[in-house]
Length: 336
Image (cartoon, rainbow, N blue to C red):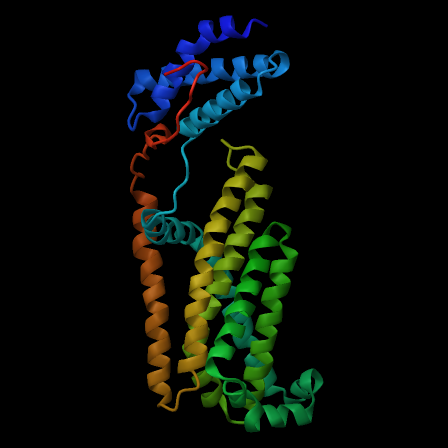
């Protein structure tokens, strides 16, 4: 290959490509030209790599091609705007779209839990079968209330946060398999049913509901959302929309599940704070329950108002990726 002749033939295109890469804003004609020149430079780079012994020229053209690719695809830059959009549109919209699923899970879970509480409370022998008579007596005397004060509040909050987030992650990740979600829900409903039934049978229902309600409203809602979104992903696999293939439907549901998973990290942080600091606080039960209910209602309002707005309002036009600035200088051999 005659290197000088090759550079003379294509150098003008490379300089033009570099100029377009350095422009802050491009109109439609500039974008079309950038695409054409990028494709040509890619082909020319391939030819140089296979035939040219000049590593400096190959390296310079490689850098130009990379800058042109970045100019076309855009470079992600973390910004508060992205965080704000996630909080105001992404997360509430994903939760709102799945409301029939998690509301259905919440209804079934609540009915099952209250049935188990009633059954255990009216059949004391079952408590002994589940946890033993001595353990039941210890649970009523001090075990249940002591659970909330056994560790320091910050340590307890961190443990609760990671534990609940892990349960939600399991529901979301295994949702497409269906059975693991039902198993996790059954485990939690059984735990609430047995403990609540034992406390009720010993006349301590006020203590049980007074301690579990402040944080349980928000915490369980987070679990319901995770389970509902996980089951929605499974349904996308079982019965995808007519306009989508099965893989496309699952991919779309999976993207929503990721948004929900990230948002639930924050929800469980709040519920952990409530459980560690408010649930065991030495204040009247009514005040603790009121605090927990206020946080829970605030979350529901957040999802219903912002989620409805996110799903009913068209998304604003996103900026064209090529509007991002790309810096760099391409120095051709012999250029001054």
